[in-house]
Image (cartoon, rainbow, N blue to C red):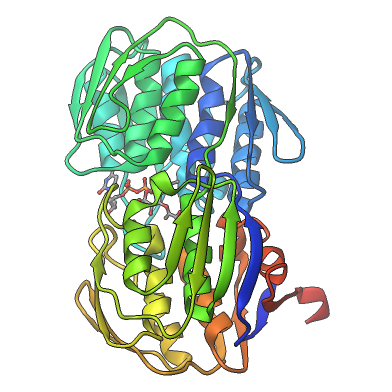
Length: 420
Ligand code: EPU
């Protein structure tokens, strides 16, 4: 397994181009199942989760022609309606093929995603919504088995706000008979990106970006071209890194519009931020200030930035209270940050971080994607050498992170298992 070795203490300075958003690209790739025509995507990030999704779609019969940051998908010869356990267990977002397969082919078998490092993460709301649209769904031998001759429009109110749940239902409703209203819908920018692709494919959708999405089903969807939105979490991660190390980073091909809550907190921590249409510049001098926050659904502070802002707080002047409200077990990075000298106490879903003047390099282990990113940030700011094991988690969701950081002055290298 690859690991990262970081020699901390370098200020970051220079430019980084942000990649396309993982959490927009994954549902959008799955949306290609909704049409027999070609769907061409640009700004597709190079990530392990994208490889896994393309593998899954390939097993279903979708043809993919991949270029540099582009992919053209064509689902005109679907040969299987099953998402197998081997793929779903490595990537829960595989559940996103359920809605499109059921809507277009009247049937789908998707292995039930189990819990994962950050929580139980059930898919009951995806199932409840599809049942409201007339699907017959059974859980057998660990599979969700769904059937429907044609889905019918319905009014669906999810019990909690769910991002992939909203996406699955929106895709299914696009081909359903009649009008579907999703109430309590997620408002994440990635939902808007997916809706824009679906509209380009001929879907009739309004209200995306609000908590009430209205979809008038159509008989068929056609091909389209679409550019994936920039990754707001990758952007926020690099901004946390420069806030922790000091320096001056210019992030290109990104958007400040989707990052309001994160930028507010970083400003509070002392990062000087300037923004333009498609760039954000972060400049940091001196020690960060402690900044308390609680995670919540968009437009609140994203759970996917919690670990990274916690890493920044470990070095801050003062004490921060961090409350995680979305996932019940998303503090796995805390034990690892403590190895680097952080002072963190956990009380239920609250982490109390008392900033220390310095962290010291150590060997740590990545436990999930955003936990890995928090360890990279802490390692960049720590004195001495930090080794992060199990960075396959990082490769799931960050596009060449160590090369991007090297280019702005970080001393970070990947040690492959072959030359470890
Ligand atoms: N939930 C249920 N039942 C459901 C669906 C969700 O109880 O049917 C619960 C979950 O267990 C969780 C809460 O509702 O406690 C919110 O979960 P949500 O469904 O919104 O999460 P998700 O769609 O599985 C996406 C992102 C995550 C991100 C969350 C929250 C993708 C592919 N994944 O997950 O991204 O943390 O929304 O914003 O979009 C990451 O990129 O590191 C990541 C984990």
